[in-house]
Amino acid sequence: ALEEARHARRVAAARPGRVCAAGHHELASHVLLLPFVPDDVRRAFTARLLDPLRDYDRRHRAELIETLEAFLDCDGSWTRCAARLHLHVNTLRYRVGRIEQLTGRDLSRLEDKLDFFLALRMS
Image (cartoon, rainbow, N blue to C red; front, side, top):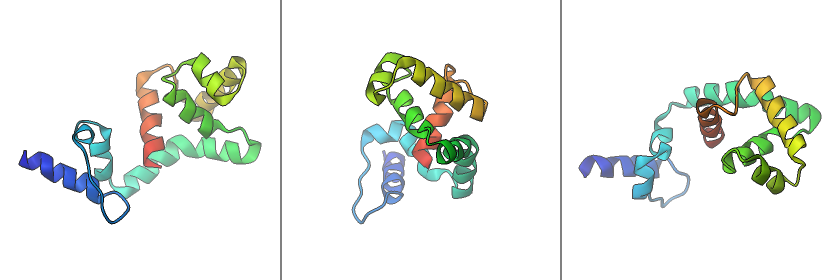
């Protein structure tokens, strides 16, 4: 219990603002781990995964970051994600393909989805 309380304090202390709290649900999830990742590791990790997408978005206004966030929020459901973004499913497939091409990742793989999820959370 004492160790859990220490972790809760660290999680809450890592948040912006004057008064923060951390609940029990955060102590058994990635939320507990992220505040303890050193800043330079966070920056390198997120840059490697997200900078190619940000650069492409900047040049082409392709909204790949927004697409990636929605795709992950929809648990990889093509239909729900396309509806959420108001896109035809083929347009969504094109964008996801472009994300995969630019990053060398495969969004059908759990490990790659997890890496993107964490990179978005840390950025």
